[in-house]
Image 1 (cartoon, rainbow, N blue to C red):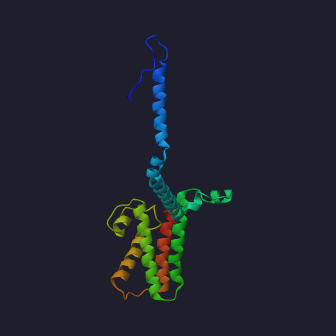
Image 2 (image 1 turned 90 degrees about the horizontal axis):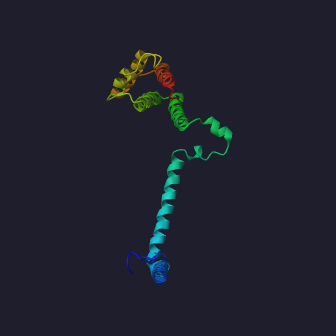
Image 3 (image 1 turned 135 degrees about the vertical axis):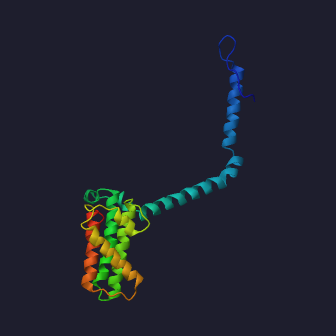
Length: 196
């Protein structure tokens, strides 16, 4: 069959014979598309496409569930108003993590106090990194803060130094009052940075 069939006659009418040839050629193409032979060849492609599609859907739902899918599927208008943005969900997750750190200070052991301080310092460091403050370590990032950003940069640097002393000296002694005081410095600074 030629690529192009002229259906018009020199007088401008329709050439019946060419029209019949075009229709029969088209019918032949359609018959091939629905033929058992072609359908048998495509059988495994269809099923593998269905399988891959289902796999991707499961993967998408797993990712959405992990990242707070309930935010998008919330059924209650009150719940939606409680969560003003996706960032608020991250804030709730951060608050939950902070509460776990805070629980360490209710334990009687000095090792829990030290661990709680180091975790609080690491938490602050992660917040400052997410804020885009440059520097190789927390001390350098703290130098990028302005006095109005946190209640006291000097006290924050002292709390950071205490954590560094704990890390360097496993036998470092710290009282519960001092540990709570340093912890409160971290907590107040994080609240000032709107991270808690």
